[in-house]
Image 1 (spheres, one colour):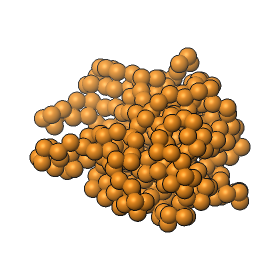
Image 2 (image 1 turned 45 degrees about the horizontal axis):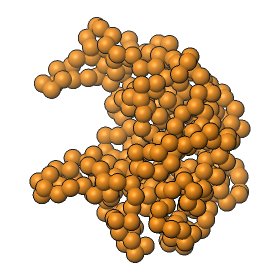
Image 3 (image 1 turned 135 degrees about the vertical axis):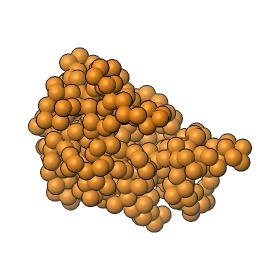
Length: 337
């Protein structure tokens, strides 16, 4: 975490209350760094930001075609969704089409983020199930690939063909041999790479249309699915969904736990990866939005931008208490005035 850069600051009135430091990398289509803040060589766990990489074998294996998956399914395979009704209905139908059910998932049960679905569960005194897990779309993709490959039921085992295929895709796109893995919140292995490697992978996705190999064609399909269905990638009020909508489907972005965020800019052939030292989502949301404004793919005046960049903070009585702002050491043109 050496050489971290102050990126996001939290002001309460005239007092600087909190400071979030981190690092970010922008890569071109060759995987070369074109802009950097902090240390690009720091090793990170990408967490859910790399779901589009994990979804590549779903397409390259022929599984997506064999089971008739639509762009909506591909978007959910890349998603950290809110478990809104639109998410859980699509995933349940997807599993039914495989003659599988909630018990075949290995992601664990999780309380929905979506208020309406959560309130309905509480009102009926029902426990959440694995379909409500924010990663159930990715796991439905794993199950689809596993059915196609004929693997055993423990598809999250690092030695399983599904996870071996995921690792192969990860090392191909990052251009690195992973130093190891940790178990993610959804129980699948999450492989380590450098911040530069993660940005390199995103630039590889961004330039996929320049290439004709099957893996690049798969990458293009995943990016198109994400940008066509931002509501499925996260949900209402979330940075992924709101900012992709604001950019009119021109850019794909994906959050990851512990302050990771990535972006794929196909027209510019650029990839972005960032990591906040303290793992704060409020900071990674603000930082990715600020970088997208800096690269002129997101309007600084769009209402969605203002949800995250220099966003006004209000207390429980609606009183304006301050801002979550951009540090002048990071992007001075967007710093709090």
